[in-house]
Amino acid sequence: MQAGKLNRRVMLQKPVKTQSPVTGSVTSGWADVTELWASVVDLSARDFVAAQAAQSEVTTRITIRWREDVTDKHRIVHRGRIYNIHGVLEDDKSGREYLTLPCSRGVNDG
Image (cartoon, rainbow, N blue to C red; front, side, top):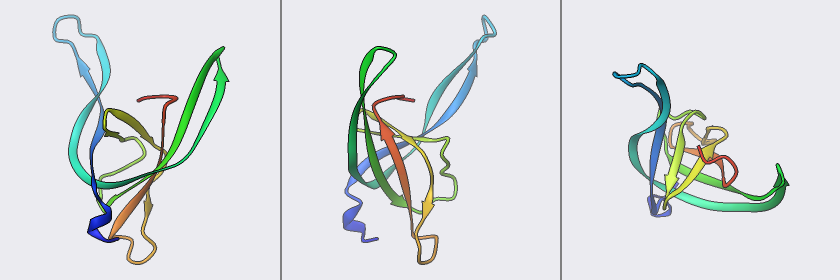
């Protein structure tokens, strides 16, 4: 992967649970892990009706430099859009150059 192709800044986020010290209730949220250089390529889009509401989903391929800690539990935020990661694919040469993240946005934002 040529470094010039990684020309977008994205934020990698992980799920976190926090407990209120006052009420003791636990809430789920997201915490920033790090900002990364990435390639973001939209592959396809589809419109559909679910629960009597029109929705659309965009399938995207995001490529980043190899990292050991990225899983499909994380998500990517790019230009205010939330991308759900569906898998983590290592490169076919060494397995440690870059990661390809098949993602989607639009249906379930986080």
